[in-house]
Length: 243
Image 1 (cartoon, helix red, strand yellow):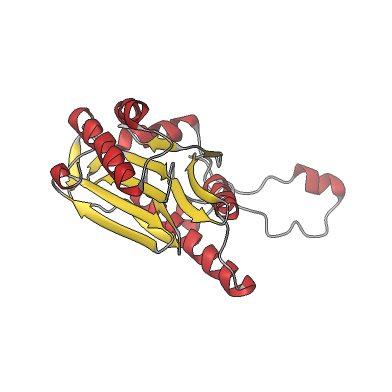
Image 2 (cartoon, rainbow, N blue to C red):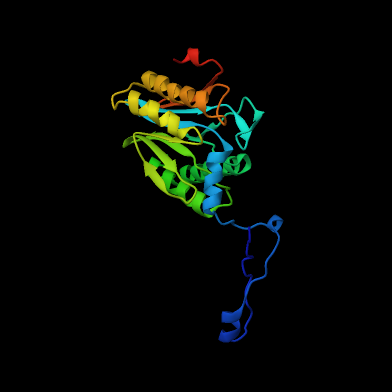
């Protein structure tokens, strides 16, 4: 991938000189903001995972599998927590490059903390989703496609953040290589009057269905429950514990 160094100033040359200026090419380790190509976006599905976000009448449920794999062919870790709390009443999934996803989460948490310190109030989900989209589009986070779910004064919200920075809100959403199988389950089982406990069962059912067919997903389910009391995250190796 070609990356171009940001100019540190072109001096006091002529207008013609500045127009003809071509910044030098440098090696990736010096740091920059990489472009996200169509091939990079496709690698999200090749890496492998299944993450689900569902709205409920009294909160939000986010479910993810526990497997980390290399290209969907080799299982590198069987106990990965792919959902993290980022706000007093919001959680976000980690999808795509592990390093990029972890860095993304750290940056979003920092933005939330700064907002609350400066304004002495919790950030709304609309503001939080906008910041997440801006970071996904402009930051050095390789091909991530997270789900954001949380509560604010306007109710329950679930957003899908695409690698180009697009933000889409829906009643439920799925990302990762197991999404086609999981979506089929959610289309059948979701309704707009689910309680938080019912939503947990539906979300786990979607992950379980994906695990059966998608080689990049497996080894159990993590469930994040977001309510007015805050965020609770629990892992289950046995789907029978939550179904």
